[in-house]
Amino acid sequence: MEPGSAGGRRRAQWSWALYDWANSAFATTVMAGFFPVFFKSYWATGMPATESTLRLGTANAVASLLAVLLAPVLGVIADRSGRKKGLLLMLAMLGVLMSGGLFLVGEGYWLVAAGLYVLGVVGFSGSIVTYDAMLLDVAGKAELERVSALGFALGYLGGGLLFAINVLMVLYPEAFGLADKSEAVRVAFLTVAIWWAVFSLPVLLFVDEVPHPQARSLSRGMRHAWQEFSATWRMLRQLPMAFTFLIAYWCYIDGVDTIVRMAVDYGLSLGFAADSLLTALLLTQFVGFPAALLFGRIGDRIGAKRAIWLALIVYVIVVFWAWRMTASWEFYGLAIVIGLVQGGIQAMSRALYARLIPAEHAGRLFGLYNMMGKFAAVVGPLLVGWFAVWSGDARTGILSVLLLFLAGAWLLGRVRVAEGERDAVALGA
Image 1 (cartoon, rainbow, N blue to C red):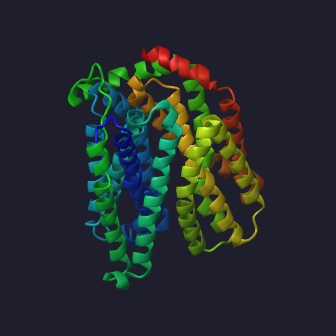
Image 2 (image 1 turned 120 degrees about the vertical axis):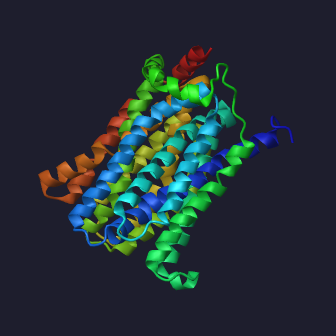
């Protein structure tokens, strides 16, 4: 079938979306699931709890800082080299090797585990920069919402499916032929590496990049990346609607990420059982799959901007519900409701930003987009903590997240999509 045919285009879109299925295994099983717990109980065994927490926090901080610094630079490299797939492969393989390496780290070797984790996060975060930029290689303007939503939907399903298997491995190691829970967790890290590698193949085999008119070698692109970083910011200022959207995105996605990262801590502070919180996490993953697909259809009908507003309204309701929550069953309800909009707001944000930038500079401009995303969940947790301490009540702390959603919604209202699309066409001409 010809690459330009409808069938070839659909194959390219599904192949692109499967990379979200592939790398989400790292986000769920490693980052959100087992690494934090296993670090404290196995690699940092015998260490005081406060000290292991400090070292785990330091590893996360270093990983986040590297991801923030590299995101815009990787975007420039992707543009200037004209080889987004090659860069994606390098970064994905870095994440795969580091995930598999965790399987080999013995008890007590916390520094080795932390180093592998940091590099794994760099590979994971960096590959998303080039992956996001490739959205404009596989989807036309009329398809951006649907295809972006497909990626997030498959990410929720794939990440949730492997995570569910890994949880069963840890709960019932004997059923899987494993000696104990520690071995089960180590094998879970290995399954992430295999899963990530195998499901990365379709994007490398079946997605054709749009050639860059001034493509350089990957090495030359790397040498010029830092020089062109400031030029990328100047370029963004020529796209005022894209710039305004980025600030709005940073505000509301900070609120989204804060809810994700603080939900377990908030649930524990209300006295809910840890097992209930783990079940809620799985619920969010599986509800997120069909919900993200549905949001793609909604975005097609009403536009990405209105779809984001719809999700923000739901998040405001979630915050008020969490503020008044008293029973553990409500935590399950909140998990389901969050699953309905979490993938949708991410997918619609990526699609809307893609409309506001020229395809010729998608790599570098998506580098800035991902940098803003990595900066997210900085202000929100601080707000929650400060308000909780000031009021003496965790419920007041969670209520403070409303400020981020309201600020993001107000700024989003100032984004004129049609004007932004015209600016993108003019700059890319």
